[in-house]
Image (cartoon, rainbow, N blue to C red; front, side, top):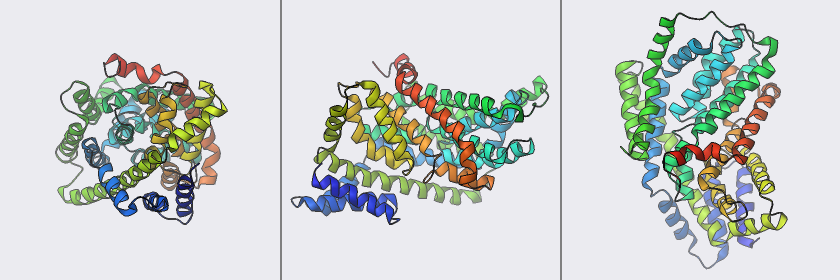
Amino acid sequence: MDPQALILLFSFVALLALGVPIAFSIGLATLVAIFSVGTLPSTDVVAMRMAGGIESFPLLAIPFFVLAGEMMGAGGMARRLIDFASALVGPIRGGLSYVTTITCMLFGAISGSAAAAVSSIGGVMIPEMQRKGYGKDFAIALTTTSATTGLVIPPSNVMIVYAVVAQNVSIAALFLAGVVPGILTGLIIMSMCFIVGGKKMEAGERWQAFGAICKAGLQAVPSLLLVVIVLGGIFGGVFSATEASAVAVAYAFLLGVLLYREIRLTRLPAILLKSAKTTAIVFLLIATSQAMSWLLAYELIPQQISEAMLAMTDNKLLLLLAINFTLLAVGTFMDCTPAVLIFTPVFLPVVTGPAIGMDPTHFGILLIVNLCIGLCTPPVGTCLFIGCSVGKSTIPAVSRSMIPFLLAMIVALMLITYIPQLSLWLPTAFGFLG
C-alpha cells in the first residue's frame, strides 16, 4: 500500500481514537495525506473537492426528507400507526411483538429515520410490552432491530447518498430495490419473535369489530399515503426524487398542522432548527468524504484492494462473504452515512468487476443492510443507544436479548447477498434496470 494511504489510514484512526468527530477526522486525515504527497496544493484540493462533493442536485432531497421526517414524527403519526397495526395483528398470540415490528417498518419508512422510529415507537411499545409480560430487554432489542428496516424500505436518505457516491445509479431503482429486502428482513425478525418468545408471548386481545378495524385503518391512511405519493410520483414520472422530497414536506405540513393538528405553528421553528442541524452534519460528512474518496482514487486504493482480494481467492461466494464480514465489522464503529461515503468507492469496483459482476443497485442494498446491523451493535450502535435510553436499560443487559435478532438480520443479509433477484426484481419489472 502506498505511503499516502497508510498516512491517511493512521491519521483517520488516530483522530477517531482521540474523540474527534468523524466528519472532522475524515477531513483532517485527508488534508494530512494530501500534504504528504508534496506535489499537490493540499488546502486548495481539499476545499475544491469538498465544495464539488455537495454540488449535486439529487442531494437537495436530503434536507427536505429530513424535514418531512421530523414533521411526521412530531405530528402524531406513530400512535395512529400503532393503533392500525394493533387492529390487524394484535389479537394473534404474541401480537404485540408483531405490532412493534410492523409499526417500526411503517414509521421508519415514512420518516426515513431508524433513530426516530426507535424513540417514537419505543416510547409507546416498550412499556406496553413490559405490561403484557415481555421482558424489558427483549422489547428493547426487538424495537431497535425492527426500526432499522425503515432505512431499507424507501424513501431512504442513505440510498440517496449511495446513489450520489456510486454515480450512474438510479435513485428510483434503489428505492424499488429496497422494498422486498426491507419487508423480508421484517418478516424474518417477526419469525424470530415467534421462536424466542415461546410461552412468554401474550395470548392476544379479542378481535375488534370490523368497524373498529376500518376506523383505525382510515386514521392511519393519511400517514401511509406519504409513501404512496412519493414513490408513486417518482415511479410514475410525475416528479424526480428531489422534487418528491419537497412534496413530502408540503404533505407532512398539511397532515401535522391542518389534519391531525398536533403541530402548532409555534413549534415549527424548533422543528426547522433540528432539521437544519441534522442536514448540516450530513452535508459536512458528504463534503469531507468526497475529498477522501478523491484521494483514494488518486492513489488507486480501490484497484489495489481489488487486486489484493482477488489474489486471495477468485471464488465469488467467498469474495462476497469477505466483503460482508468487513462491512459488518465497519458497522460496529462507524455510523451508516459516513460508512457508505467511505466504503462505496472502495468496494464498488471490486463487486462490479468481472470476478463478481454484481449490479451496483444490488450492492447498494447489500451495503445498507450490512450497516443497518451496525446500528444495533456497540460501540457506536446509534439505535441501540437510543433504545436503551428509551427503555431505561443498559447495553450489557440488552446485548443477550439482541443476539437472536442480530442473527435474524444476518440471515436476511445472506439471502439478499446470494439471491440478487430479491433486490433486482422490482426495478427490472418497472423498467429501471435492463
